[in-house]
Structures are given as structure tokens and as C-alpha cells.
Length: 294
Length: 264
Image 1: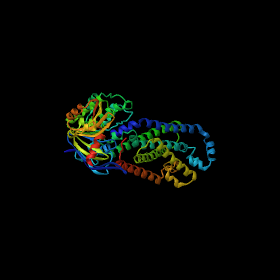
Image 2: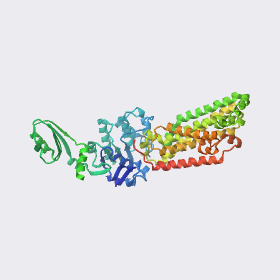
Image 3: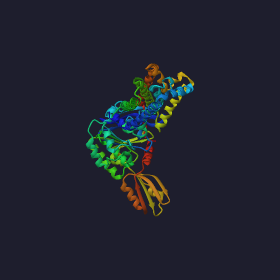
């Protein structure tokens, strides 16, 4: 059974586009990534799944049930972490978490304390005394305390320091091992690459690519930038897999796709003074997919 | 039930402050009434020389002023004004505060239907207002008994009860406004201007002597003079109040259930 099944989902806000004809499925036990630049429609899709907003057309189902019709029933098995978390400011963390737990038909006290320990969260503080990152931690505990079967995360790592990100990711993997599916939106490719088995790429409201992360990394583009000591001609870079070559003064930059050993050998032929190899930004990857589409 | 309790906890302080302040206003007048004592006849003479319009605007019924009920109805119009502000604030903020504090995402992704959320909020506001009225009534009646002793309790309670009616009307109006608006930056601005707007319309109606204007201002739905004279409420206005409350709340539910909750 598919955990999430989205069919031809379209949402317009008045005349402005939210998403157009989005379709994909998330399978049971899967960690699914949803990437795209800001304003592409990631949050719109998520908000429809959570029945916070209603679609213009198309349908979305979670656990095989329509998202809108069965919203309260479905919500019992969903944990949701928004990109920015906001809670009742005058409440203490523990009261907020207890209030949150009171909506689910089980005793979550033990889990609250376990999670708070893992995330290193002080339960006695008031919400309005917390920093942005700490609020996010409350959000993490809040979204996992009822052991949901589907975890929906909207840009989950913003505001978390690397150590906490690490802890959070291992927490997610643990939940995933226990059987929870994870749906994660992000505009940071590397974070999606680390966790997800499949990704959907969305741009300007449309899904432009749906593939296994393995394939995506195999087709992995690397961004090279070389500072060259002695002038070399453009022809030096005449080689399979190099694209978007730009040469400016003594700096050459290009995208490379293919066997990494070959390019390293090639570069070693030139005398260079500096070398940068970077993950291409999401935009650059989109450029690539865009070209393909056309 | 958890949402209801959560809301009630949030109302606790404001209910105590509002009900005590309103009661304070009335109790002060009860003391003034006592203080006037026999001089009340002179006071009556002074009032009867006032222009009729002013008497109407301020709910002064000269014939009745020597009784506590009549004297009370004068201050009571201000109590109702305060009560309306409280109720309107409460109704408007019930939904608007979730949007403003950006907690709507939290609450509305929980396994409860929107209908249940609104029902809980409505019940909480209703009980908060009921509590306000009980505290207010208890304090003023107690003061009346202790200070004046001789007065018509039934009329006194009947007049006081109209506070609750007016409050329910403004609460319902507040709910309707808050589900219709996308985001309300300042609840107080919206509720105060609405309440004062209706108050001015009502006073203007009395000022102009135009009876039809009464239909447009809840402040004029329950005429204390009529209540004192007939020991009853005016049926037509009672019906309008109930009809308005039901319509406004039904509308609120329909809108709220269909509404898009936008991201913070």
C-alpha cells in the first residue's frame, strides 16, 4: 500500500500558481525527498496533505484515505514538523508537549522524556524564552512523541546546529526502521541525499523529475573550479562529461559528470595552484534537468 | 475537551478582571444611590429638567430613578458597553489568535476536525462569558442587598441578564469577523471600533428619536425602561438576537471548515 498517493494535484491561490498537476506516490517504509527552490510549491503540497488548504483539483490520499475527507483520522498517525515552529508563547515546554499529546489516544509521557533527552531539551522553560533552534527541538519532540506512521517534514534542518541535525537524522532513521515513512521537503540537496531513497524535484509548481537517489548520485554532477598557473587553452578541457566551461583570467570552472578518476588524471596534467570541487547547487541541477526537458 | 480546557485556562485572568471591573462600576453606583438617600427627590427634579434627548441617550428614566432598578439602569448601559467589548474581543480572538501567534498549524494538524475545534472554542468563550455574568451578578446583587436591601430582585436580575444577551451577540459577531478575515493584526482595534460603532449608532438613534435605528444596534435591543414597566423582554428584539446569533455562528462554521489556512 502506498502511504502517500497524489494524483494530478493542482492548487491556485486566486490567480497565482501554487502547484500544477502534481502526481507521485510515497511507498510504505520509504524516506522520500521533495526538493525544489523556494516558492516552487513544496509547502503548498504539504499543506494540502495536512488538509490545511484545499486543492483546486486533483486528489491526495494518505494511508489510502482521502486527505481532506478523513483529515482528523489520518492526522492521528502523522507527525508534522514545519519549517518554522510556533507555539503558545506563555506555555512551558512540558505543558505544550502534554497538550500536544492529549490529542492522541495513547500515553506519550515516556516518549516525551526519551525524545527530550536525545534532543537535549529543557522541559521546564517557557516557549517565549527559547531561541529559534530550541523551538525547533520542541517541534521535533512534538512531531514524534506519538510515534506516527508518517513523518512529514518541511525544511527540517533550518535553525538546527550540525550536531543536532545529526541527532535528528539518526532519530528519523530509527523511526524509519520501526516502520515509519518519512516525507521530507528541502532545498538543500545534500540533506536529501543523505536520507532519502527517492526524490521528486519540483520547480515552478510542477514535478520535473522523479528518481531514485542512487540514480541521481550516479549521474552526479560535480562543480570544478581550477586556478591555473600557466595558461592553457580551452581545448585542454575537450573531454566527455565536461559542460558549462567558463574561463576567466586564470580560473576555469565547469560541471563534470562521469568517472571522477578520469577528470582527476586530466587535471593532474596541468599545473594548477588551487582546486575546488563542489556539489552543484540545486539551481545548477535544475538547469540540467531543464535542458533535458526542452 | 482538551482544547476547551486550554482555552478556559487562557481566559481565566481576563474573566476575573472584566467581571470585577464591571461589578465595581455597578457597586459604586449602588453606593451612590444609597448616599443620595432622601435627596433622591431633588436629584429627580434636576434630571427632569434635562432635555429629553439626553435622558434617552443615557438611559435615564426619571419616574423610576428613585428605585434602585431605575437608578441601576443608568449605569448598566455602561456596563453593557464594557461587556460588549469583552465579548467581542473574546469572539474575535478565539480564531484570530491562532493565526496571529501562528499556532494554527500546530492545532489544525492534530487529529481533530475543524468543526470540533470551533465548537470547543465556542463553548469556551460561552462559558467564559457565563462565568463573567455569574460573578458580576453575584457581586452586584450582594452589594444591593447589603447596601440598599429594599429593591425588586426579579427586575434587577432581568435587567442584568440582558448583559449576557448582548455579549452573546457580540461574541457571535466576533467569531464571524475572525473567520472571514485572513489575518487580524490587532484584535482590540477591530473589536473596539465595531463595538463603539454600534454604540454610536444606538445613541444616535435615540438622539434622533428614530425608533427603527434600534434594530441596527444590539445596545438598544433590551430597553431597561420597557423591562421595568412590563417585567418582560421585547419579544421581537429577543427573536432578532437569537436569530442573529444562530446565523452568525452557522456562517462561522461554514466558512471556517472551508477556509484555507495559509502558512505563517
